[in-house]
Image 1 (spheres, rainbow, N blue to C red):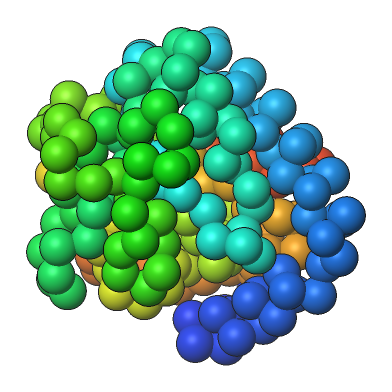
Image 2: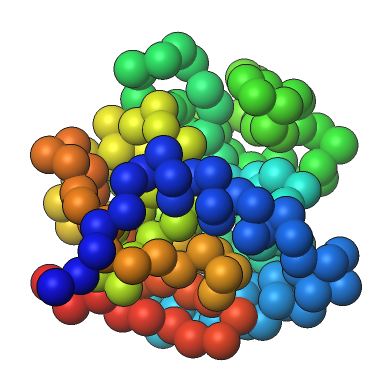
Length: 193
């Protein structure tokens, strides 16, 4: 029988594991993760994707997001509105310098960039603190991504994480939306429904 770990413990343990990686380890792993993300999005999932701007200790998908916005796709990043309110997706500007610092110190597009309805997004790259191989995700605990994408059953959800963030089975809560793909530096996991 599998042991199910609490989300609070996973947040603590997996944040610590992520922070314990050296800068060089994080950079090498991030490059591998971005290469895997590019393969997933090149093969399918349309051309309007939601993404996020990474924090310093997360997988650095920043260059991938910029390249995607500038070359191939329409990329939209979230803006925090308020707790319990869906995120608003705004078009990624052509430069990081055109972004503003939002809630929690996270970079986000300014209000003047065009927004898009979640209904028009075909795939979303979402941050996670931990995930299990069944696509159950532990985020920061505010539920903003679940609230934002809960009305879109066909959207493809992808989470880029370091392999140290993989977890034993996570007990999903009723509001949790499972991932379709998990991307680490070592593997791409396609979650079977």
